[in-house]
Length: 105
Image (cartoon, rainbow, N blue to C red; front, side, top):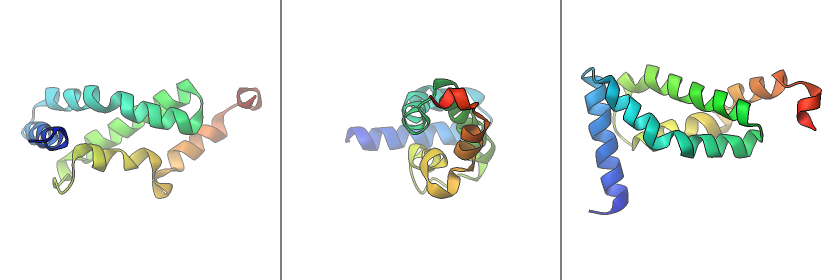
């Protein structure tokens, strides 16, 4: 089994465990994907505090929506667009608007 297939299988296992009420499964998903999402968001925003906020919000939204996750894709495929798709950028825009002018230097 390829590494990607193993990752997808583990994601599905963790999602199934979460749907059965195991909160530690979601904590494992956060551990697996926090750095990847944070890095992507930080590249977009170029501000560590804002990137942390957006990353945290991404996982909060994933936690709320995970019960509706059908498993048609890997968790990472499902969660990552939350922070980089054009239609999902309102949070990035709001965070950027809140910045003080001297934060943009």
